[in-house]
Amino acid sequence: MRIEILNKAGFIMAIYEEILRLREEGFSDYDIQRVIIPVGLPIGSVTPEEISISIIAQIIEQRRRNGSSDLGCSSRGGLI
Image 1 (cartoon, rainbow, N blue to C red):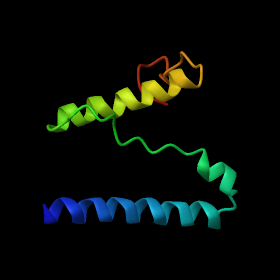
Image 2 (tube, rainbow, N blue to C red):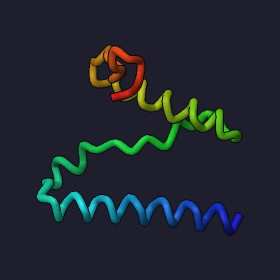
Image 3 (cartoon, helix red, strand yellow):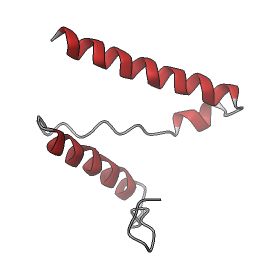
């Protein structure tokens, strides 16, 4: 449990540092608020594979919410 809390704290700190970096690079608060950091949908994921699926599901959900059918795949099959 303690390790899980420390991992979450480290993740939150990494996000905070990234926000500070974006501000230093001149991004506005509006731009930063538009950034989405997928952490997965709450589907009870336990294994790394399940967590990966929940993250991809969240990305798909967000793209559909924005009216996009494009999932950002290049013609070579990789994500852009």
